[in-house]
Image (cartoon, rainbow over all chains, first blue to last red):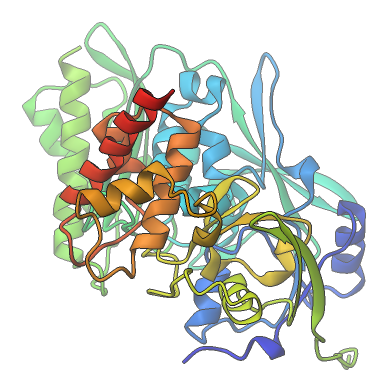
Length: 288
Length: 167
């Protein structure tokens, strides 16, 4: 059942300090509203529980994408269209651009934001696996100042985040300097476009003399949060990628993830596909 | 601690520019732009399909970018320049994409057609010579249950050829 729009408030403070001031004055009373591509769907379904929102879409200072020698800073309000069209991101952070291209259609990419994708905290979100692979950090902002947290520590449980009610995600920070790593991103859904993933795997590896020197593996839709498969990573470091090593990695991954049956897929299918995606990635590393 | 007493939201007046004319929309801030444009400005060429951002039938352009109007709250249209299907033709002169859809049988029931045309027009304004693969990506957010898409893709590519011959 559709919600009555008359019972929802959406205010537009005139700038970012005003937003932060309201969030601080009435903690928990107001929540940020960016591109609306998740919240409006819940509204339409009658499942939007919170009633009062602050429109932050026009806070331009949170939309900029900037580069320094050591890191990229992506404003939380950067849309998928902004991300996938950015020259440095295309060159150095192709997994994130791939994720942006595979999220919804053009209309969704024009409104959906990277910060919103994180704050919506869906375990099936498309960009977080890429952010985990790149060791992303988040800059959180409040009236009291800013703090930086590792993105890997940000999601603490299903739809739970290390984010206070008076804070906004301001920027996503990606360390630069991963040139030469072999990368992989694959989202498996019902349809090539406009699908929510059944399983998504993003990964990157550095190989030296035919062995894995360093590796990152992250997955969506196989646990209560988007996750990094650190046990599988650790089991692969220093290994040569022969058939036995790949079989071992499949088994380690299967034990590490906790997929469920739901409307989109089954635990059994998700586990099998996650292992297959890992194998596809590892085999691509072994052949180069 | 008791919470501060909540005031119920009131309707807000939103100024925007729609199909080349100044317009004022009066609605609750979380009302869907889709409904405000259809009901207050009688722009019923905008269709509601799924109401959840999956089908693209309600596609409009906001500040030159394709959006699903079912997912835009009216408060976010303040100051925006909007184009709907009603603003695509130049008077009686159809856009190449509109004419091609007619010529090549790209429409059947017609519900997806306005959104499909806007998505195609928006693509051609960013990329005047798209490949078929680029057309498919640009229209991936617009679902059609009648045509099987082939005639739609043919129509858009035919419109490109017509536009090139003209320019």
